Image 1 (cartoon, rainbow, N blue to C red):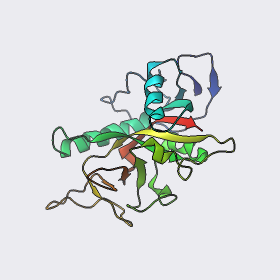
Image 2 (cartoon, rainbow, N blue to C red):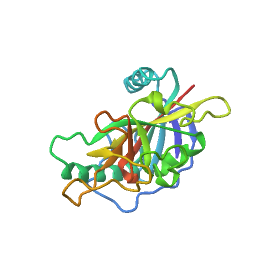
Image 3 (cartoon, one colour):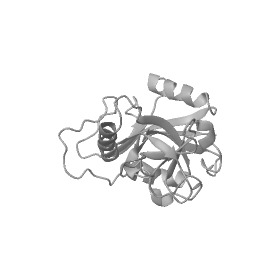
Image 4 (tube, helix red, strand yellow):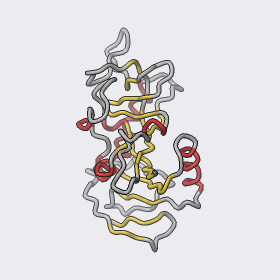
Length: 223
């Protein structure tokens, strides 16, 4: 496959992608705003053009919490998105009608994890690297300023830091605790909460235990 700047097909870089969709789901449809992908192409990373409304909206959201960014990249992964959509349908059908099950949240990371996250998503086997106070899951922050800390967005040799803006299925949640490997059950039922948080009244940190509950939609590089 090729990586290129969005809206500029002349600026191309070869990128090897090995993930493939197993089987075909005729009901699945990729987002309308994705760049065109070949049928056999599963993953494409697209550098956003700073002049586009998409870039401007994301930049404004980022600037409000952190500061200037150097690059914004959109991650288009058919398999991960298909799994995410299926999980969303399941959570939407279980929780009360009208409940906000999805949020846009931040996740800081080190450069060497980027290719793996783009291809395979967030893996709970990495949990504990930076935080386990609320459970052994994958952590996402409400505020970009939290994920921008050097502990989470680890600077590379040039001082550049990176974080993802993710779609996350937070669903119904409750307090998290150290050592949790899955959410607790809802009172009087055998149904698990969808995730856990630091403070249910005003959550700033969300922890998920199912890998399909988060989709790494945009990568922001900054200093």
